[in-house]
Image (tube, rainbow, N blue to C red; front, side):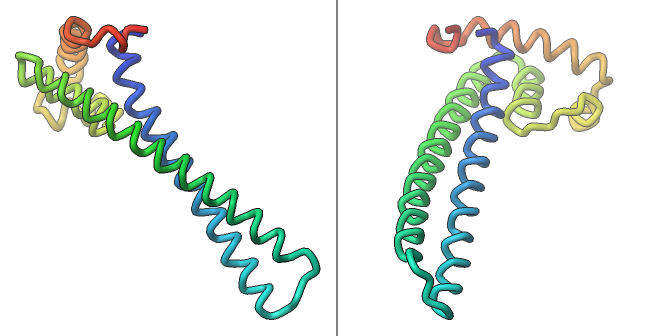
Length: 140
């Protein structure tokens, strides 16, 4: 895996965690809706359906916690590595692009008071130097 792919993985893991949390929230809402309807009308087989949803919710919440933990650990490791870079400009660009998740080069350039072209050039340098300090397991 390249340095860029490794850093893009931070965003991917964050998105996976958000999706897992959203799935758990939808199941929670379904359970609440079913609970309200069961309170007003007895439905045959309803208790089993509710219990099945609760089991699915427990599983979804567990997956969401695991995904959030993995995303947090990976993001923190990436941030530690970025902070090892010598040049503050490299650190700033990588943090904005991959940790702060500002995707637009114009916004990054404006934030750092660079031209767009210079920001992209520094990004390339930062990725190169980041690749030199990446742990071996990130290269796979």
